[in-house]
Length: 223
Image 1 (cartoon, rainbow, N blue to C red):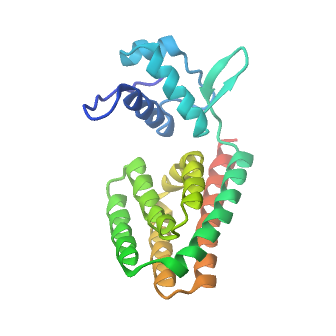
Image 2 (cartoon, rainbow, N blue to C red):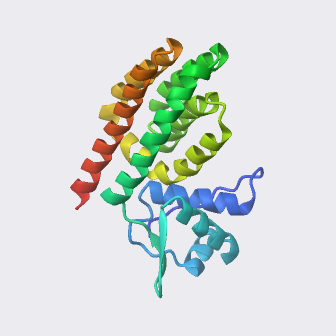
């Protein structure tokens, strides 16, 4: 287990701080795929009781970052091509629906917000902090989801987002793709602003396919 430490936040409950700490450790590779998550060991390392550790592990399971194996316990989940394919196939279908609805319902105010989120995403790239970049990317797509004015769809996409987060981070570790991501975001904005539904669906499909291809290469390299 590599060194990582907890950073207390007076505005967050302890369970959320522990969850964020473990999540970051997994995404940064400080906790490796296949590594067991021993509650007592983690509690001692972070200076907390076992309860927030246990709660954090449950939440990490929901994100697909951790799996629990009978008679073995919790461990960091491997990144598998099948899991990625399953998650991103569902994402592709839901985002295709979201982009159609957004084309019909997006207000000019929402378009301007999307442009601002694109600027913030581009600014985040210079930080070299993959988790910050991933959050900025999430915020860009969230504007589109909210513009659908369909709370059931937004709820489904939000639930899926947690499972998708790890793949998004793996994609964003590859800096060679940053110019392409910026271009795709800009094209998405143009298509939405011009109400070009078919073209918007095509670019969002391409956007997700590119993520699949990048992460697949990462997985195959690690085999």
